[in-house]
Image (cartoon, rainbow, N blue to C red; front, side, top):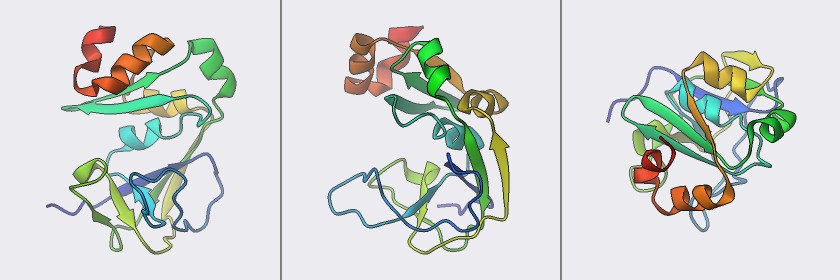
Length: 156
């Protein structure tokens, strides 16, 4: 395991001076409060998508892809952007059993960001880092959730 030199955290909140552990979306039962971060800005950018719209996030090699269960117009109306924070790495660890392995790191203690970039929309952030977006209907989205490894075959 190689410890990253930089970690990024996305939040709809743009004025955070300190990130505190929380866990609104636990990956498994009884998961403790954590701060999540990634060494990939493209992956962080996808986490700026509105929580009111279902998404599936995937990485295929060097390609970062988000499947959005919405049409472009509805998504744009709800997209409020946010900030991608640069975090110090020393309190972070990774879990190769749960989550995204070395693409996802977590800290159990509060962290003060060292820098941030604010984006007016998640689309702006995703475009900055080359994220591929697919807007899909309910039926296609459910098929993607059932077989994420083959999701690209459904949309390309």
